[in-house]
Length: 218
Image 1 (cartoon, rainbow, N blue to C red):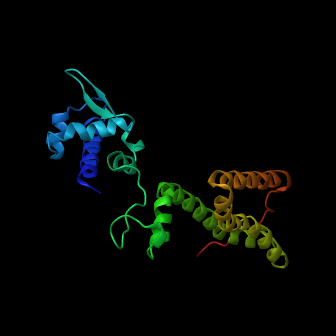
Image 2: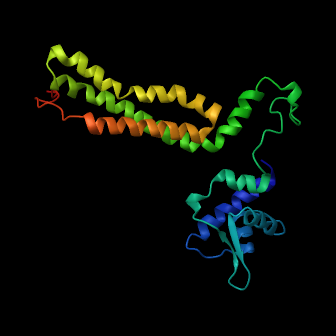
Image 3: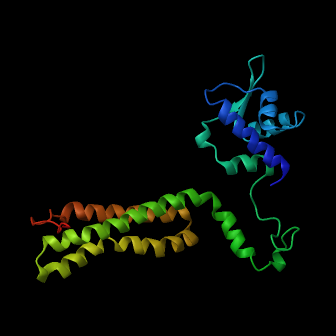
């Protein structure tokens, strides 16, 4: 990141801190608070405004403020407002521009990481829910064991485990569908299949048989 990107991040932080109540922050206040060159600060704030991240108002009570709440402004947006789109243009091993006809050893992996970066928050959220699904299976096993007699537990656990097969299928199939048909189709297809499974459980599902419940720890 260049000095301009650094200045843009500092300016955005200042607007987030001092303009939290919707008020405007003057250019000289931004420069003083974040140790920015006074002559360069107007240009940095203008970059944020042109990117739609900040808005300006002229006049005695004017200045700059964020165009939307600070928790809705991504750091990547601020950096790209100053540096341009985050693209693979410089070789991280050799320096200088990338030569596609003579790609270095890490070009493919680095290119994939650059393209996947905007999806990283969604990936974390998806991983959280997948983890919750796996944990629910482990928690439910002792309940199923307690509800059914020994001669029926194997079948009962098998039926119960079928509910978690969708997670494994999605993990293997969704990336291939996304690569061949695009990410939106991958989500739509999985959502449709989940809706079918939910409908099947709604129609065919029954309450668990009464029983003593899972054994308690003494």
